Amino acid sequence: MTGIISDNVGRTSGLIKAASGGGGVWTKIKTLTASADATLDFVDGSDDVTLDSTYPIYLFKFINIHPATDGANFQFQGNASGGSGFNETITSTLFDAWSKEDGSNSSMAYNSNDLAQETVFQRLTDTGGNGNDECCSGYLQLFNPSDTTFVKHFISVANTYYSDDFTVQTFGAGYFNTTSAIDEIQFKFTSGNTDAGKIKLYGLGDS
Amino acid sequence: MSGIIAQNTLDNSGLIKAPAGGGAWNFIKKLTASASGDLSFVDGTSDVVLDSTYKEYLFTFNNIHPATDDVLFSVNFSADTGSNYNVTKTTTYVYTEHGENDAGGAVNYNAGRDLAQSTGVQTLMSDVGADADQSLSGELFLFNPSSTTFVKHFISRNTSGIKNDYNLGTHVAGYANTTSAVDAVQFKMSSGNIDLGDICLYGLTT
Image (cartoon, rainbow over all chains, first blue to last red; front, side, top):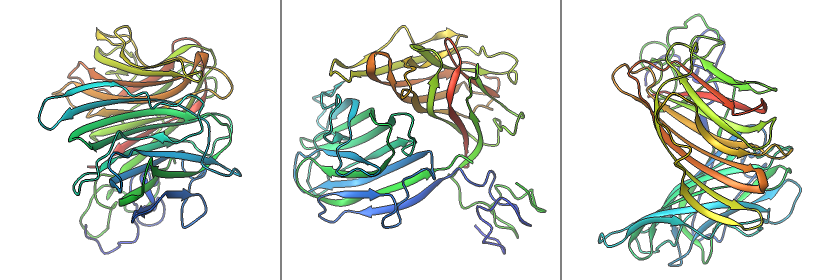
């Protein structure tokens, strides 16, 4: 991109017209880079994280998340505003599609690691491998977390290098069954640290 | 939006610098339900852009709350700028369900919700509950609606708290089987109004 007036990007008024519609793009809020971390936390108001009414939709992209422990599952939970602990009540659904590298096994099925009014962590992936080139990537979309009328919906998609040389795609959906605002999200593995990888938080504007 | 130099939108060269790079979602329009019979996006009306400006469009559903319990939330397309929402569609419909009481827990194809060359509405979510804290959220991607060569593909994912306190997730995909441009999209419930909620429209700069 070139241009003499280069600082008008994103402005919607003034002498120079900028991007159509002004806001509404996915705005990057924060990147956390794992380095043998037990948890990766996004807390509204801390460390430049915004997770409030600024955006109606938030998107977490997790990229090349590598577990320290073979066979661990990547997962998340939330904390309500004013609450303590990542232990909100969740009801959810989960299913997988998979295929083995040697072509011997491919199918899809419901994954019983769903939640029914439970306060434990919600899985995003199936069993991840910790070989040097093994990891998982995907996204978690959170709708209107600051709302105080409705439950808080989420959907997720992830692909995992399964520990037995499978690719596994995992689809999740559900809700935090609370009318309190959710302003903190934590990611971690079922066992061991998050050895490497990035989680990026974006907000989608609606004006 | 205002500005003396208005025609540089989406240009990425010249004296005036335009939007950063490509691949950005641009906000177009937000419709907020308030006991609404439907929510319709019509190209050229009320600042809605739904034409060749963008090759991909995204509709987001935020806490869509029905006035009536146990209803279907649906979409349909128009090729005549909203005069008729009756474009022929062929689609697939996969759903997951799981009760707050731990009942169910399944992924299934629902042959009763897909369409085969039908002009009727496409269900995006079924059994939507009208409890005070119940609603649905999700998204629908519409690809190249202005094409006059190809059919118009769409993909939608949604989640909801539904009647009987279940979580329902839906995966809907298909195409509007027309080579006419699709220039209007309508969302509504199978019965009763859309009481509350927002639907936003975005276009992807490529």
